[in-house]
Length: 59
Image (cartoon, rainbow, N blue to C red):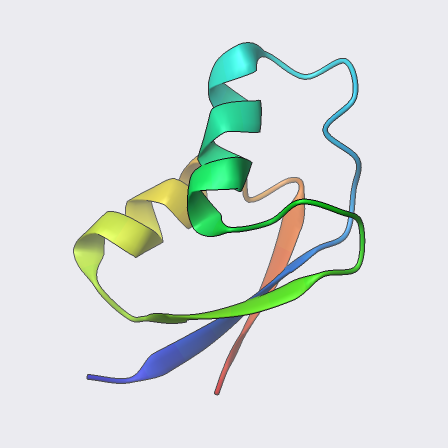
């Protein structure tokens, strides 16, 4: 499967708890951090849930 890079570009402060948990499940802890994941439906759904807080690109 393809890899996808996810970068946190906005803060999780004053966001609902489920969005904060989604960011931590993706492995994002701080602003500007980049993590790499497999391009699976589960990961894409999580990215879609916090798409206003992250940016993505193909790895």
